[in-house]
Image 1 (cartoon, rainbow, N blue to C red):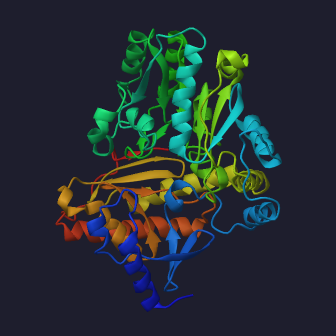
Image 2: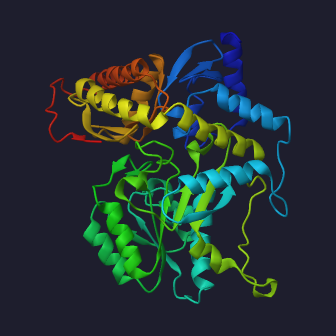
Image 3: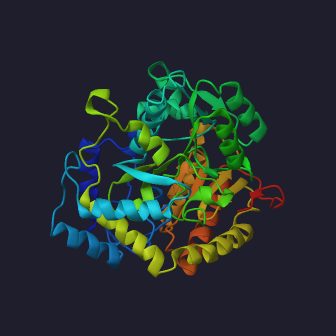
Length: 447
């Protein structure tokens, strides 16, 4: 434990050498953000000893809470054997066991696991795998991809090429390949575009049910199923990017299960290790895998890899996390928290004068504020107000994201929602929003 003066010194050292992601550095240097030194359960503890409820599960990846004894023990035990070994020309037991577990859990005929280290890498792999798979099957015209408007699949250039968030992606357009944008929520329109480009499409990539970084946009029922059917008719692959939605976030282990959809390629990350270590996985069917088999002279190898592919520590954490899902009946608890979450949001947030709309599926929630000038940084102000009250949130512009760990208790979830309401109220008053409650109808998208 360090005192406040040490905290200030650490912030000064941070400002001197670090460059933070998705952060306007000039504004960052003017803040006194917490310096996190420990975690316990659903709380993070800063260098001054202050505790914060982790309302976004450390960027949507912490599943079972911090310092879960089952996962701690698994990582420690693996550390006593080997911390890292390459999978180029070698293999190891934890990668094998995790692959078996993932294949057993995955929907449909997904049967092959390709490891990487980040969600963006998982989607890059999916895109390259889809393209090369078609080429090696003689379908050389299939060189294009389709994506959903306002989608997000990572920040590497392939992932950005199939991303639809202009503020993130537009300035990189000269570096990107051209992809086909499908309308969000319009199943017939999306299916028509897929049919129009059927002969040239390698794959359609989608975040199932909820588009995360695009603003927690909830797709209408049947939309994902319509994409699956359209891909089948067009002869192209469906890639489901479940980096954010996987591992219980929407109430089922994988979001695509809720529409009875099995993708050809599935991308996993974030919660795969319970939020402990960088690990990602791209799962494919044998039908795709078989396209990469052949003699050495045929050069059908998938020439892609990562130094930390299948890292043993990450795989050990992931296996332990899956054990916790089973032993602690996590998905059943999520169903309880899901119902509570909806009731709390209706009671405390939905009618606030400063709230435009609430969008939610399971424990993924975005509270969109009324429009304000960008210079007001209304979403950021709400985050600061909540932080002062001991709750850590994260904005997407003027959308306040609430995405707690699946392990959150009923009391902690109530605190999360009430503090969010208090923070929105304080900022709304500061920005001059009339203090007249608005009707609930039309302002909430049900789970």
